[in-house]
Amino acid sequence: MAASTHTVTNQAPPLVGYDVFASDRALMEGVERHLDPALLDSASEELSLLGRSAGSAQAQRWGEQANAHPPVLLTHDRYGNRIDEVDFHPAWHRLLGKAVSGGLTAAWSRPGGHLRRAAGFLVWTQAEGGHGCPVSMTHAAVPALRADPGLAAEWEPRLTSTVYDEGLRPASQKAGVLFGMGMTEKQGGSDVRANTTRAQALAEDGTYTLTGHKWFCSAPMSDGFLVLAQAEQGLTCFLVPRVLEDGTRNAFAIQRLKDKLGNKSNASSEVEFDGTWARRVGDEGRGVRTIIEMVAATRLDCVIGSAALMRQAVVQAVHHATYREAFGGKLIDKPLMRNVLADLALESEAATTLALRLAAAYDDGSEQERAFLRLAVPAAKYWVTKRCTPMVGEALECLGGNGYVEESGMPRLLREAPLNSIWEGSGNVQALDVLRALQREPQALNAFLQEVGRARGADHRLDGAIKNLLTELADLDGIEGRARRLVERMALVLQGSLLVRYAPPEVADAFCASRLGGDWGAAFGTLPHSLDLAAVVARTAVSV
Image 1: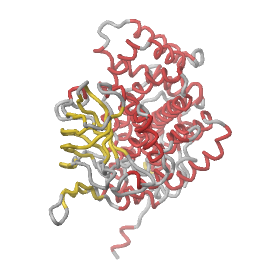
Image 2: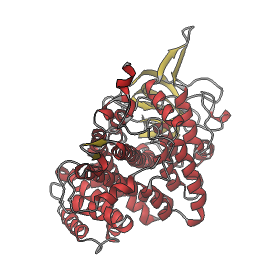
Image 3: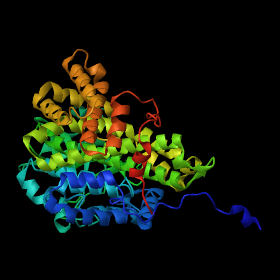
């Protein structure tokens, strides 16, 4: 008899069994726009296959399991021998295996690789975000290693492999490897020049031993790590293999795993180097310059990862509102809810469109595009990652109490959301990097202005925003104190120019009216009511 009181009505069905790629119009259109037409059919098929996996019940379950059973540190074996291993749930390995086999570490080895990989990363990390950390660092290690052609020839085929080969063995015995990174220390954080880890040269050219402590070492079960340490000539980049070629473990003592706000599935650690064998990458004293290309690539992944979180959050919100009824009708038909959903959809599409434009610039590789990336990447990293947390929080609220419980998946998205704003340099670091580029690299500003200028004349609000931005750039007095404001405007102008050129008119109109024209409140859901908000929301909806 009690069962009759628990009849389930007015609940949305599970959002499962859909193609994460093919259901995302902004993503599909971006791939079509930037990719060589000769590659489009194969890339779309590949991304759709990954998209169906990401939207499957199986992948969703893997994401839940990997976070419900976080990694466990095993410092010693049963006999008291030091082993320094991290034990992961099988779901973690399945997620990583799918990411690697899907080409998410293979951008450097195929045509259009960066765009295809960015789209795949945006798709697959919607299933689970934590495993994206080693995927990102493995991808980003390639340009740093190219500072040493010998090391690159040895390691790049392993890094770009589509085979996930788990377990600690000499890298030469593995079909594919993963990389981590160890840069920050207790006393310095983002100020890596304050690092105190020491490097002592050995008799063999290019080899050293390291002694010191890393406060954050990501993905400690990886096969190799790029780390910074002080050599005789100054801060230098080194490759630290986890297992040496003779099969012995390198000195790599994992002191503890970090207990983090989110990103629970991924192991972040503190490690001790004590006579740790390493190979120098690049010249002594040029460590920052050597590793900066890795940092730039991981910063772009922060943008892509945030775009993925935004997309998954707004899809969940729109899906819920499509089925949930309140006050005599569907939530999605209520003008106020429609305004909120449209505002979230704008934020998501702007992030996706910008991320793909940056990835396409990597594939182009011209001097003009490299100059554009020098400003656009830190500006995008600053703004997109910073918008992610409030956006995901608002999407969670659309589900009400249903969104606040763990089973909905929304709390996991919200805990993950701040990560990309912190990783690879927090907001102030990105803003200062933009100022550095403005002051030292005039070609970067020229390339940026040429990019946004391609949309000039198409929307008066965008034209006004560009004019105001030029005024701000012309006045450098006290610029550090207003750097965040300047970088925010740069990112918004860049997003607006891309949407005006490429998005449907209703999307571009709503973005320019709110983000550039000033007709917007301090919270989501404050778009001008006269806009075609129903069309903006409909563009985001997913059918299951």
